[in-house]
Length: 240
Image 1 (tube, rainbow, N blue to C red):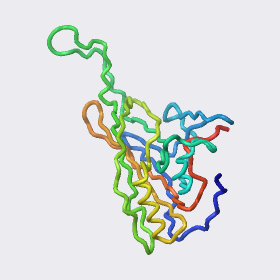
Image 2 (cartoon, rainbow, N blue to C red; image 1 turned 135 degrees about the horizontal axis):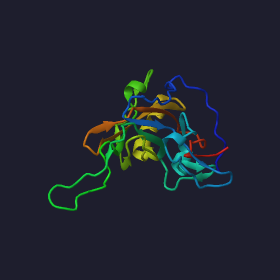
Image 3 (cartoon, rainbow, N blue to C red; image 1 turned 135 degrees about the vertical axis):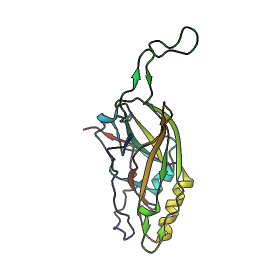
Image 4 (cartoon, rainbow, N blue to C red; image 1 turned 45 degrees about the vertical axis):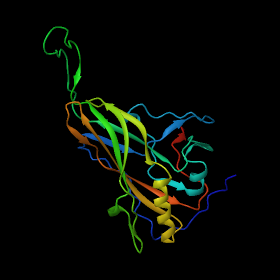
């Protein structure tokens, strides 16, 4: 049975607690730390339906190493995301800010029976994945340097319509033990009990017209406490 998390003193090696920012001129606008919600006594969690309906956020994350290795990431309360040991998911929402480009009456070349009445949304964006990193310029610690966390790619596919179309989903911030071990070993080598690392995430994709696009870079601080046995940030909260 888990014991309550020990309260640890702040370490001089903690990174600045940076929250994610959104660049207003980004073609593909990304915000993170999105939390799903559930009712009291329930375990079925629901993500918001679109970008504008996101109202519950986590401004930073926490990983208790013992809990993380044994149980994974909490869903809500003492319920855990199945198979999430050493994997940490982040809720994100992204919005297509390109204008509506749908045109009616496109026709096929040569012969009859073209594409009459078909809506062609050339400004729709197919998001093909995300780049996740723990960049050295945001994660340099006095006396121990910076963590060697190679930039990772999360592959998925999501179509976002133009004119304000949006998607809300979860994306792995830490994808398994090989990535998590890099962070935990860095904490152990530093002599600190916990360290806050600033993760970055950027979406990549292209419009249906073939133009490559990227989102703003979102920053999300996550504190790693290898000896802690409870307190890992979950993916869901009970709605008030």
